Length: 530
Image (tube, rainbow, N blue to C red):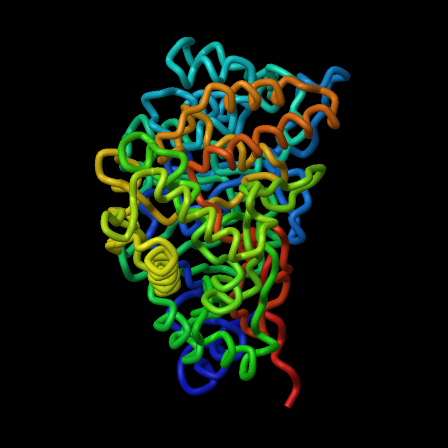
C-alpha cells in the first residue's frame, strides 16, 4: 500500500487506509487502557503491557488469529514418547531486531532468568512444569539446574518434571519470551527504553512517550517480515473509556481497548458492524486479604460472596456479554466448572444464609463491618465497585469505602498485605486449561495477593501436575476448585467477554477465546470503489 504526502489527498488516504501523514508507511492506532509499567517480558504485569509485548517478541510457539497454536521462533519441535522431553528447532532465519542471530542459548538464558528469584517475576510459576523450576523459584536450587539445554546453536531441549499436556500453550506467554542478554548486561533494568530494547518479534520499539503514546515500527529482521502489512503501530494509554470512544469516533483510533458499558446500547445501535463482542477466558473477582482480620474468617468471606447479586451485576451493570460466576474456573477444555454450594439456592435463601454467616462472624446492623475496596482507575470498575458496595450495604449493612488508584500504584498496593482488605482484580488464563486459574491461588504463587495458603489445596495441585491420566487429573482439579470455593479467598463475580470497536477497514481481525490480536496479522483493506 502506497502512501502519498501533502495536501488533501494525503489526508483522505489517511482517513481511508490508516496511513498517517506524519509517519512513514501504514499506521495502526490501538487504544490500550493503561500505561505499562515496564516492557521487560519477565516482569511486566497486566493486559496492556502484554498487548505490546506480543508485537515486540515471539516465543518458541506462536498463535494463529483464531488462537490455535502455530510454529513461532521454532519452526518445529519433537516430543518424546513419555511426554517429558521437547526438542525445538529454531528457525535458521530467526534474528533479533539488531540483526544478531536468535539462538538456542538465548532461550536458555531467558528461561533461567525468569525463574531466578532475583528477577522478581510474578509469572515465574507458569514455567514450573520444567524440571527443577519450582526449586529454583523457591531459592532451593541454582538457575543452571533448570531443565533447558542448547544442543547446538539452533536446537533447544526442554525437559519437564512430568508430562504436561498444555506445555506448548505455556510457551506463548510473555514469561517464555527471549530477552537480549547483551542489552541487559549493558543497561540493566533500563534495557526496555527506545534505542536499547532489542526484540525478536514482528515489531521493534521506536518511541515511548509516557501517558501519550508508544510507537512500534516493523522489525526488518523478523523471519516473516515480508508478511507484515502494517508498518507502524501506535498504542495509546487511555484509561478513560469515554475519552477512548470519543477518539475512535473522531477517527484517531482504529481499534479500541474496550467500550464504556453505559454507552453500549447506543453503540449497538449506531456502530453495530464495528462492535466486536466475544467470550474471553477470564474471571473478574474481588480479592480478599485472608492474612489478617476481619477477612481471615471464612464465614465472613462467604457472607460477602453470597451478598453480591451476580445476575443483577451482569444484566444491569456490565451488560456486555459477561456470564455470572459462581465458581473460580470458567469453561475450559476438558473440565467441568464447579460452583459454590449455595449457588443453586433461591435468592431469598442465599440472602438468609449470608445474614446468618455475617452474624456468626460477629457483625450485625448495630456493629457493621467496615471495609475498604480498592480498584484501579477505570470507569466500569468504579461502577462495579459502587454496585457491590450497595449490595453489601443493602443485604448485610456493610459500610464500604471505595479507594481508587492509578494502575501502577494500584498494583503496588494490592500486592502489599499490610495495606489491603478487598481489591478488584481480573485474571485472564494464559492457556486453555483449568490449571491456568487454579495455580494463581497456590500459597507461593507470585500473583496470589490474597495471602491465602491452604496446604491441602496446594497438595491437590501438586497431585494434578504429576497425574498422567486425563480423567483422574480432571477430578483432582475439580476437587481443588470445590475446596477453594469453600474457603473463598477471592469472590468470583463474572466470566469475561471482550467488547471493542474495530474500524471496518481493518482486515485480519478474528475473535478468539484468548483475545490475542497480533498487529502482524492485521491489515487495512482497500477503500471501496466510489
